[in-house]
Image (cartoon, rainbow over all chains, first blue to last red; front, top):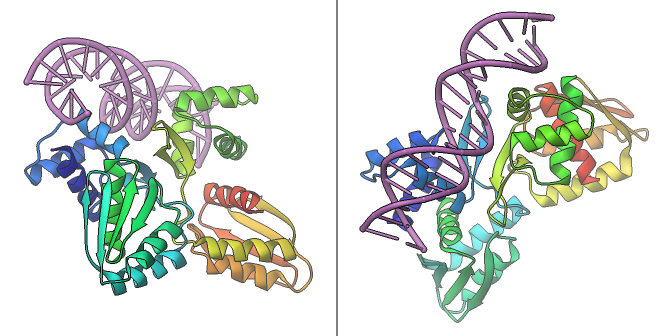
Length: 150
Length: 150
DNA sequence: GTTGAATAAAAATTCAAA
DNA sequence: TTTGAATTTTTATTCAAC
């Protein structure tokens, strides 16, 4: 399954340095996911991973830095999410964030305030905020980013 | 000359999307700089350029985002530099920032406060701040980044 | 230490297939 | 629409020269 595989890819690159698509292929195999280099090349494009040169000069895949998002804003977001969010999940290109009653608008607003790439819009009821992402891969990437932030 | 070429590379990728090293080769040729793909591959590593996937899905070379630097800090830096800096230049791995008298420590402090990759240390007199960078390529990259910020 | 030519390695794409 | 095998394209490295 594409979404599963891409999700695991994000996990893998957050845990260790992956220099080549073949390395990624092996890492996926270790987790029981069999694929091919061609597919990974497409996944990497979908997930908008970058290839960066690390401190030591070796290159590796990484999640693109969310541009224009200051760490201050990230801190504020973390605070708000921690105080308000109860659960969150991803479905296709949508992120669903459940909050304690009344705080969904605040959570949605906080996320809206960050210039998150691919975030098309948010809508919040009382205890549920919906984030509409441009595509499934970007929704998945944000899901994992929230995981990291918390 | 390596430094010249690398400097022009940074200019080129800030002006237009470069998808491949061959495109970069051509762009350099237009500016009278003749090189080879092998050399550009090395330059790209030296400058720690990343290859990212743009909004449209095409990949391009870009300057690595300075991690952990919030836009608030960038704003503050801009303000301070604009108010204090008179000239700036790069020499090898050193950036020399001249300021109006008395303000060099403030400028150096502001730069120190950002987590700039490759910035080893700063030393400031009355009207001159010196930034010691880890290597020439990183000094050059910061030079261009300051250009952008202002 | 820097470079280019040749080569090896890696990544993107094509095309057929499911 | 997703995928893998084969192929093409792109990038990194080797090695010789400077």
